[in-house]
Image (cartoon, rainbow, N blue to C red; front, side):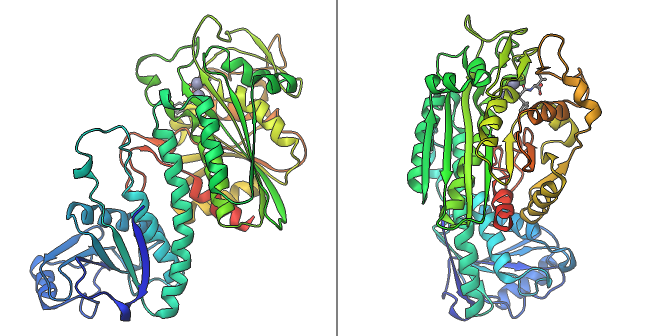
Length: 493
Ligand code: BES
Ligand code: ZN
Ligand code: ZN
């Protein structure tokens, strides 16, 4: 990742290659660091007033070699997400300009609910997440593309502010590194991330963090535990499943949480094979699993005083002569049975065993993350995570999401809809009523496997985990959503 440091305005570097001036609407550029007569004349000529996403570029100033003024819009509307997106857009401009060093002037008149350290953190996130590219498999034009500025220096009001901002930026770097880890794993092609490979990634993650231990269950141990769901889905693939349990145990922990993630390394649908374009991007079906592993890594590097168990079944869902079938009945780790009515509803089947396993760890909270249903996209679109389960936890997650610019919305889990998963031959079936509340019936299926009294929330990230179009801070492809919000939530849990 590009280097980002903080200094006070008094320590500003002389003649940076690019000075980036964030400017709210109708605030004069006069008096800002690096603003000289040439910039003020250009602003008048170009009628630059700091309107949202308007830019003013002046090459060859006196104070800085080049100046880019970036409009933030009305200062009353200024929030962290506006800053994050502005920083992302400006960082991409800096990349186009091929400058090595950028001095960034944070906006000086922030609304009172935003302190400068939070603003610096948002700007750092915008830069790191916005400059992300996945080019591991590009063999051409790589050098031309790799022209990221080497360093950004965020200039704060005073020395004290620069210190506070440095701490906030250091935290952002840990969190963004984890987001980028998720993106790299999710963007990775499915022929390079079979379950066994994901176990190796989990081992690398363990080695990168502090106070982490790793347990990996393979077929024999899964058989012994009665994990018929994971084994059933994995049956059609030549690549055996692995069940990953990463444990973070800080020196002092007040509470504990289990994070469960869906780890389908490729979802072809199995015998209920996906048709048309629906199979495209199904390498992203392990995004929940990558998210919980990388969240645990971030928590360990930040020394959060919270015990965390990340639990991920990794499988490949493939059609073959040995696949699980429609009409099969599978028996899970808690003895419950489910009739398979669609092998493409495989996520809930592997998560059933994972939730029983997580429940038995007796934590104070269970959260699960899964690219579970296309219906979540129908309900909320590509940019909003669907949350279901304990109301208080949902409210906490949603508040963290608002702070981090990751949208979330709650769907209900009505008892009346439990009948949608009734089966004639087994305890339940793995599909709901056709065309009706598919996200909710999937969650009601999962609920059957949550034991104990601790709160549980299910997060369906089918939309936001992987985007077809660039959304600024979230580029096309894997996004790493909602890792930042989860870390933010865990900080206060
Ligand atoms: N992995 C898919 C869900 C998905 C769809 C994620 C689109 C991301 C984008 C999941 O395994 C699936 O196929 N679900 C089915 C369930 C249905 C068969 C009950 C679906 O949503 O169509
Ligand atoms: Zn599926
Ligand atoms: Zn799936």
